[in-house]
Length: 168
Image 1 (cartoon, rainbow, N blue to C red):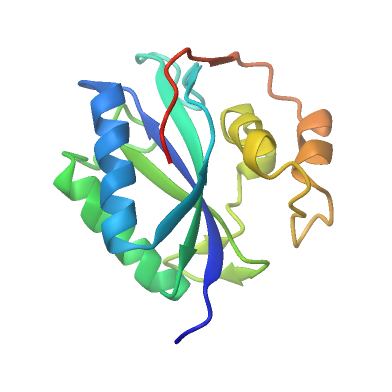
Image 2: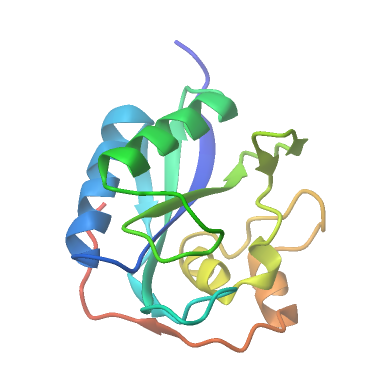
């Protein structure tokens, strides 16, 4: 049996039925990528980058996978397409967005994928859900924990926990 790798993903949705899309994304991740070991609460967040669009729902997942990083990325792109993602403009509104935040402690910088996610430390909508499931996870480049990155973050956008509990 192959060694299981721990990847942290961030889900985001701000179009259509956001809660249903997030639930379907979790199901597809479990089928196509690996076991969802931990799931943060759902958070409503203000758009980052391009702000003239609806608010997002975000969630962080810890997934145990045998797949290598680029195969995880390929599966994510397939899931996004299945759920109606139409990539037209950077940071545009979307039915679903799935980002790889971490893949174990791997550092990778290719045309297809950068690990850890290059903007993680700048975005509270990613840091807050990660704080919930992996506060002591160390960023392999900055050598700081998620908690330390959050404390140093200059992002002032709201991240509000929703009442809906997302099952693992």
